[in-house]
Image 1 (cartoon, rainbow, N blue to C red):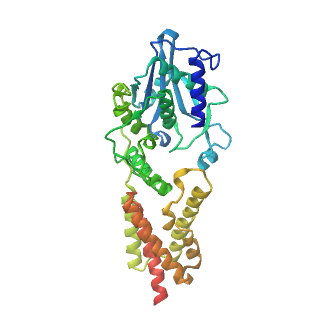
Image 2: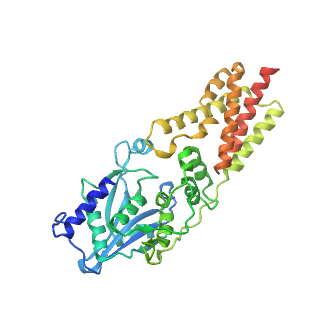
Image 3: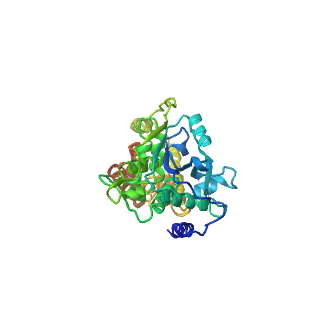
Length: 378
């Protein structure tokens, strides 16, 4: 909000005749501003779509797309910074025709919502974007939920509107996790849904306000479609299709629920037939325990908002590493504690609507822990 306040102050200077900076030319009365929403691509980082702002002014030969979702793969230690949540994104400015060429090549849909802005509000938005595009201002620390390409568009539109209040009616609130599941729905991305549910903790189950839901570009598009200024005038014109999604259907992979269900069935059968080798317990427990250490790192070692308080750590518990080492010599309290953790994790998965593929994993681990506990009592 501090940065937005600075931008509004710069707009005020321009309005009273003092140029904010020499490179920001005033737009003509025929200039327009639009919110651009792009559909999902085939790469994981494009799964959740994209948002940008378009400014057009034929009188000044301007047709720019301002894109807050730009990052540099050549950034030193790119993947480490991305993993820890310290990767800087930046605002880029691209000719509209070049922007569309990329999405046409990727065969992704693109939709436009022209904002019902006054000429002054269009100028406000343009000046703020130009100020943000300055080299010293264009970089920001990306946060997938709270500061991304869509939330930056939302904040700019709201600031440019000035005193006019943007309101939303007849909107049902959902959690962050709900919107991520919406993005990976359709039966083709079940493994990605599982990955999301493995890495996200309790903050992902927070029920979003309308503004918070706008972190997801498609949700923001739907919200702007029903939004009004001061409960009267529509914020946007009706959605205009610029490109259709012509991607070939993704090949459907084997569902994770079936994969891990077969794992549980196989382990249960081998256990019943007394064919399950002792060393397999150690491998199973160490794999789960090491993954638990990864979850601990994502919780305390990164700045990601939604990887904290991840209850998957109850079933992927580092305690399993101790049990793997001690095996039949594991203390009874450790085995009982781990079984209780399995139960709590299963309840969380069911109540909060996580991927059901996690349940057979828990059942597999619980079966083998239960057998160890039985040997203690025999």
